[in-house]
Amino acid sequence: MNDQTGYDATIQLPEGASTLAPHVDSLYYDIYWISVAFFVAIVGCMVWFAYRFRRKKGVKSKPPGHHTALELFWTFSPLLLLGYMFHQGFDGFMRMSIAPENALNIRAEARQWSWTFIHPSGRTEGEMTVPIHRPVRVIMSSHPRGASSPAVLHSFFVPALRVKRDIVPGMYTSLWFEATRLGTYDIYCAEYCGLDPIRGELTDAQLHANGRPLPSSGHSGMLSRLHVVSAEEWVEFDRVGIPARFNGDHVAWGEEIFGQHCTACHVIEAGQPATVGPNLANVVGYDQPLAGGGSHMADLDYMRESIREPGAAIVAGFESAAMPSFSSLPEANIDALIQYLASRSDRGAEVIAQLEASRQE
Ligand SMILES: [Cu+2]
Image (cartoon, rainbow, N blue to C red; front, side, top):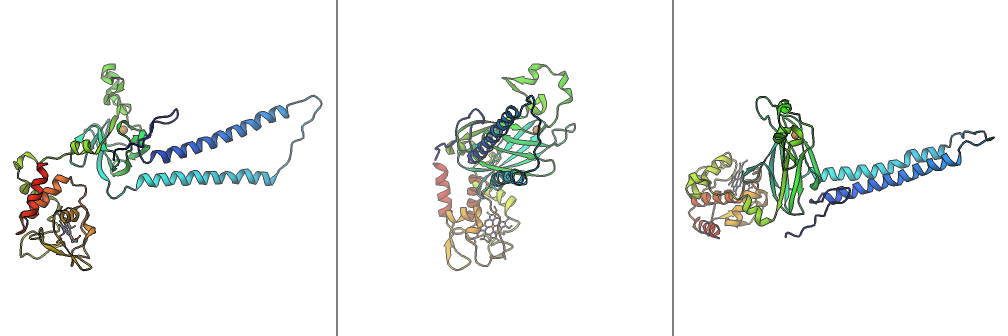
């Protein structure tokens, strides 16, 4: 699954490392060659006319009048070309804007003059790491650095991915991409976001290191890197262990996660009436009646699916309410949740054994 379809840099463009890159590049080259054709045609005619109709002794100029058909032709025929460019550009813009449903969510926080990336497990780094061949949605926001530095306009730009979008104070913006090539790529801020007033007092060593500007040099130092890694390295990178305070107790950890995300809609007390969603006591290990007839055993797969993709199987009697997807929770958190739910079921022992076994591997 790690076959790389990205490509090297050319004289004109940086390396292409995302599924969007071929689309952007082909449009770029189309526009480039259209421009070359017009340049040759227009400058060619100009040079030829300058020579052909140059001033000659004894020849008086006879300025021509209108040629309506010709004028209509050169006014309206470029519309076709412009229409093509607009269509292709808009198509690419829409592709970049609408992330697939199963995208990983990574938060990007911009400050004067640094980047913070919060990965799905909560792992927070100054550089971004993503798995190859997985759609990733970047959810971006601007933040004040401190009392003296407000939230300002920035722009997230990764040339190798061909994605760029502004980060506007007071709102979230997002884009998505799917990396197609392993490696490390530059991340820039592409919106001038200010210069530190103390800059004049800094020495060169405080402004640059290893040939790169440092954050102290202001906007131009607002640099970071994107690491595209294999699926295996990604699992290693974004692993979330059980927090130390639970001392290995997955049920207690699951109960905490349940309290954070689920109690708004679910009770988990046998005999209590259901609220928005079903009462989750005695669910694991029991057959669940489904909307539209039939039923499904609440085994480990069913439980994982119910939390990641609640729309896939709707519980009978709850057709009118919808549960949001929790697919952005890390796998370890979802498994802890399920272990907690299994501990609240008379028939949960088998699922608990499966979960414990899967952690041994
Ligand atoms: Cu910036």
